[in-house]
Image (cartoon, helix red, strand yellow):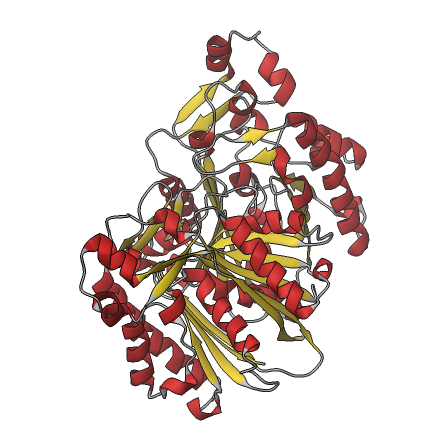
Length: 309
Length: 309
């Protein structure tokens, strides 16, 4: 069975910044109300660019930084929750945009954490020797699904895109995934075409913390890994309170977790790949480092991946 | 690597039948105009049932006929092109409906042929020993996306759902997939939320025939299989003219192909699993038979699977 590794990353955030100040004025809120509750100072919103343009620009960023010949990609999976593009999906539009000749394209809907599922699918195609390179895009234009009277979702959510290129590794690399769905509780976080996004904040908080902690404990146990062996936890950037509670319950110091929610907000499927890209830009990740990617959210769905850099 | 087999099938067609007569009256067409051009006599349309109800009833049919304990399912993939359910997806709603405890859910958008991709993903999870049973649902309520003035799409397309349960096989079974996307040509067949489905019939015909023939020739070559070794070809039911041209070019006699388009029309992602279910109902398939499933359509996407029953 072939091993995999992360080859390159890219990301893109749209131009318009929505600061807390802007929201405070609109909703007549106290100065620190939003930041205190969410840990977020600003979020990005795309007014002019389509969701496929966001995806495209994250790939352009990846290419520009890593000088990878994108035509070698044999699989593109787009994970999203905010698309009206049923056929062809965004993955097919990306194949066209970059004129990729031999490729399997697929858009997947797995709530906020489809990025994790996408990595896991591409890993299987590589592990079984069917492809050498696969591209995952997490992209959201979630602003189109927000009720402009609902401060609870407007304060948290933002648009963005992140691209991660996975390839066959010639050396042994650890990899383990732990993905589980909880459709039974799906009604607490919904986003459908022609409806506004709905979030039952309290229930999402409870689920986000308890089920995610269980999932990671389970991952560590199954892989016989101690948390000390993990260089970084790279979680979905849902809300700072959820993140802090997860870290506390797992007894993980804050420095071990990569958190950028303050400047970007919660970008659903784009959040983990944007983090990863920032971490590569900052040269935080080195060959052999073990990290855990953690996705959770609507569906409900939870997925974690232990991957060796 | 574990082997896979088809364990059980189910399907569901909604109640309302739209006969050619009905369309002839509305569009003032000659009696045989539709049948001559498409091979279709009638199609089914769901007015009252939602897309998730269609999916649910195909699973109920599978359970009722096969007495399988659906709670054993560890993965549900729904392939569709006509959903507004972004989060949670239909797969999550099915987990909830049947109260399946331990499961990975995912909806995929891969044009008309996502059913093939879904089988291929589940096969990988089983082959790598991660799950034992996976359920694929191909479901469409495409009638919601049709322009009621466009006879070309109204004549061809219909609603429906098909369920296929895949499981680990204890004996060696042949399996080979050949999936390729062609996003470069995606504009000839599109379906987006808040838009009517668009089909450039002539280009779809050309693509459907030439690319599908190439794909199958390639599959046969790679697996070193002669067409005589194949018991049945089970193609996506696109249009009788496309089907006949594909069979003719591949030099396959009509009896070797399963065709039900006359009575059902083209149900996009539901078409292959409905065919499979009918074939099991008619006891056409026996242990050891080799069959080829062929999906093609929007994206563009083409995929064929050689699978041993």
